Image (tube, rainbow, N blue to C red; front, top):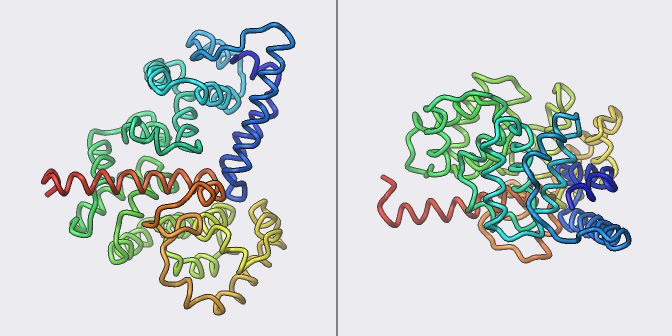
Amino acid sequence: MLSNYLSNHPAQLLAISNAQLCPFTSVGHVKMLKKRVLELCWLNAKCNNLSRAFTAPKLDLLISLIESDENPAIVSQACIEIMANLPQNINITFINNVLNEPKLTVLAKLIISKVLLQQHSFNLIRLLDVTTLFFAYTAQSEHSEQALIAIKQAILVTEESSNESMLTIFDELCKNDLINSPLMSLFLLLLSADQVNKIGNHASNTLGIDDTLQVLLQSGFVKLVPLANASLLQLEQPKKIIALIKRTLGETLDLLVNFETQVQAYNDDEHALIDFQQQLKLNWPKYETQLSTQRLIGGKVLDEPLNAIQMSAMDSYSQALFNLYTYYRHVAAEKVSSGVQK
């Protein structure tokens, strides 16, 4: 089926890959795109008397595809679509095999990151070690033992964690190019407001304004949105800030900024960027009392369970963060109750 996907539907696979990263595309819409390409592949196989059985992609074929300059984003998405039709034990074996193949490092990173973006990622997160997520998102080819220790500690932070340990974890995340990543988001979401303030102060002294605002917004505190908005026109990459604002507020952003303006500003339209800033500044006072005390992912309160409809309305990245936070908060609570964490 891998050849079926890649030969006949590369454009659809790329569309799915891009949609999963877009803050304005819902999980429900991505699901529709995935269902459609599955139907087309199945129909093509039936019409051409091809096998309709799903099997894990062969490593030698994947190596050949990557070495022949096939787009890794498309190849990895094809793998994800096939994995969606396989048992978890086969998927885990496949992931481990890809991870252990040096020629497939780039592809392995993409597959892991895409696994996190799938609709039912909560069921898969427990099967992916946090160091595997670290490997998937860091741009560094080599990393220290200290970095790995810090990553493991990042998911166990509590209000009792020392300032020194927090800053060490934060610095290691930054050193490994994880400033704007699910791991940084997870770390910040597990911190209290006071701890986030300390991280923010440290970031402002060590990072540029773009990176500092990206860090602050990943904490989920809505009160920080006006601060980011005020600097929007001075940023080198306002697109990233708009994405983070959207992933914080979700559909609530529609109360503050016209939806079309949001999308156009995200797509680097300079006039829309100005309009975005002005509309948010103008409308914020109307909702400040309601919003400023909230902590959200995709417009949803962190510690409230979501139903299937609410999850489908989120974008894929926000859903991944929500699942990561929910799972690792549970892990940390279990360790505390068992006396593992001091």
